[in-house]
Image 1 (cartoon, one colour):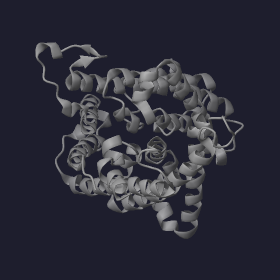
Image 2 (image 1 turned 90 degrees about the horizontal axis):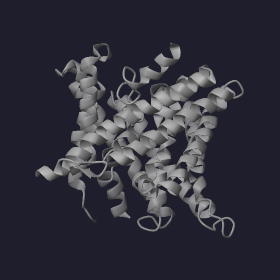
Image 3 (image 1 turned 90 degrees about the vertical axis):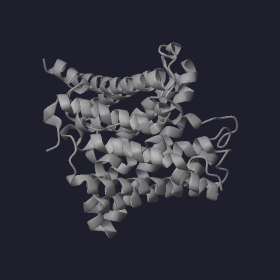
Image 4 (image 1 turned 135 degrees about the vertical axis):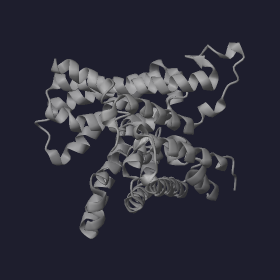
Length: 200
Length: 199
């Protein structure tokens, strides 16, 4: 029961991106196309899950004064694994993501979940929490990328969807500011449904 | 060099073009005073860590720099973040010692500079730009300063706007982060006019 609640909560009601406003940096930059957005979401899920697991296993052995640097080392190691993997097997996507793979290290979701959850919970719970938060992040990424690719290039995953019906590409959608505006609108819709999240 | 500076402050602004440092940008931009303090701290850290990481990249990580035939550049993430974390720790101790009021004002956001994407992003972009725009330590200092100032400018402008709209009638669901994102998007569009400027 508790486990399933831990899993579903970050997906909607307590989404890390649109409720806690974490991990925005990379959430916006990689969302021009669906494919890099999906790969980025899965990479972050992997890093969050395993950094949560490792830090939860280490939580009683690490003095709290040096915990930040230990966390950064664990996270950076996992990100190097992801980066090398992407370069080896998905070179094109890895080129598109460029520095944003490295920036998973400073993604606030990863650090935030380790600090807020893994340091106080058992390894298995932390692992599930990591996966759930990673997927919550991936969901928003894919949602933003869906709108940007559909209206910006008329395609989905590179397949022609509406361009064939004489749709003129709206290249404004491909520029950075539109990602911010789309996320603002997602927050608007989300908070209209979940009234308890509204400020004052 | 002037071109690089203008480029990093306005055209490739950390916030508006790359969304770097958005977490603290949204969270701390509620008052201009705190925003100025945090912006100054970020600029300072950026100014120091980008050249440091440049030197590290040139003399340790680059292909054949340390040992002939060994390419250590896959270690750059972990070394860069270690330099940044150590440096932020240092800044934190100095600020706590010499300016306790600023220290209390910034609170948790001071140590969080270590995980501010703008800092790590600055170093990673610097690494990518070696050979094109950045060719020596001087360039990396200019780039560090420029990108830091760009972030500072963005957060102060944002804080000023958010102070103004405090009492405006905004749909309840848009209050807080929702409207902040849309304002940032509009400011980003305004900043797009700088693109293509060459000096």
